[in-house]
Amino acid sequence: MAAAGRAGAEDTGADGGGKAADGRGGGARAYRGDGVTVSFDARVCRHAAECVHGLPAVFDTARRPWIMPDAAEPGVIAEVVRRCPTGALAYRLADGGTEAPDRPTTVRRTADGRLLVRGELRVADASGEVRETPRAMLCGCGRSAEPPYCDRSGECGGHEG
Image (cartoon, rainbow, N blue to C red; front, side, top):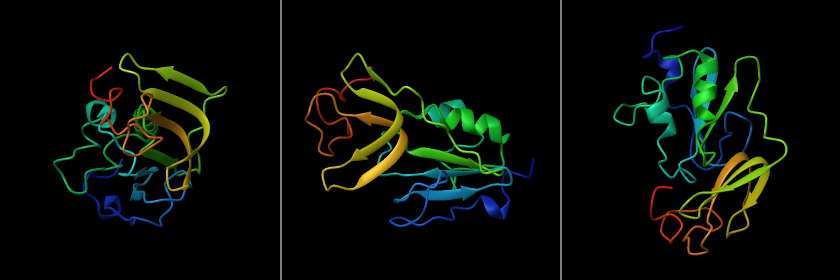
């Protein structure tokens, strides 16, 4: 494993037109390491903090760059990325492997009403932009300012569930 601060771990993506680590388009930024590239799409992140709590050596919001993909083994990073309920994080292993979507697709309603969806998803936002993702957190109350995603502004996102 390379040193956590190596140059290749810098933020190498760009907002708006880059490809996510798993090949999805959109505004994701890519963080390249020797064994894994992790991408982050801030547009759909809702700060569930599964990444920060799961692997603080890799995901540290107080540091720049905040994602250091060489600070842990690629398989461990992939496991933590898959915990992200929103799909804001994605990965591509050096051998080209990416996250396989859940089959069949599952929908779980949290105690506060958010919808956590996993599967082979194509989610269209209010502007009509379609995002392909294996995970999404959707609004269950219909009051999100960013439909169909839960932005935690309505009843279903106001409390941890």
